[in-house]
Length: 222
Image 1 (cartoon, one colour):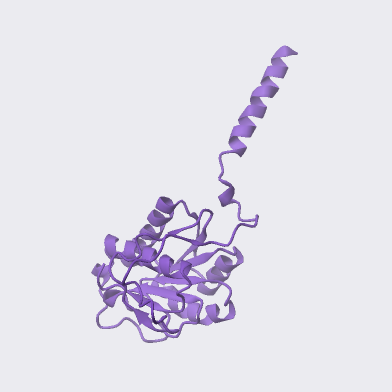
Image 2 (tube, rainbow, N blue to C red):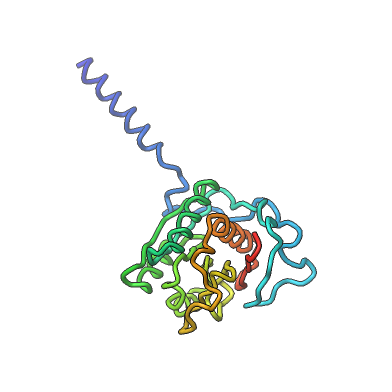
């Protein structure tokens, strides 16, 4: 009997430890506080006397986003399609950023059905959906206007006519806009460097957290 009691106690302890392994922020079924920006945008991110207009392009000073971090429990879905080198570089940058910032990250791969993938990402009700991959640009242009309460960040590309909930972070070598426009003459797969992709996710999130949305963040200099 004493052995059974010890066994039961041991199993209970193991169960308690196992249950405690997961972070509460990983349980997206529970409500959580509205995300906020921790830290402020530096000088030169935007002109403080004139807020950017919808669909406009801003060229922030390099590093002006460095002091901005998401609040605890920030929920992000990485929506990705394609396995080319630029897309892989963007995916890695987003995952590295999420790990560094202790963001609760989930990934939705939309290789087979882009619209269905976007819908799955929206159904998760994240604070932000980050899109990586040129194949998603046209489907995003169709879907995002019907989900204005959901914030989207497109890294390494942009939607040609974004609604206020779609922000983009790209540069001359990453100027795909979809809608039959294809890649611009300046498109350069080699420009998707680790440094530039990292800047795209950090600058883009910094803008979203400060409600500077529906714009293009141009990062020719990082």
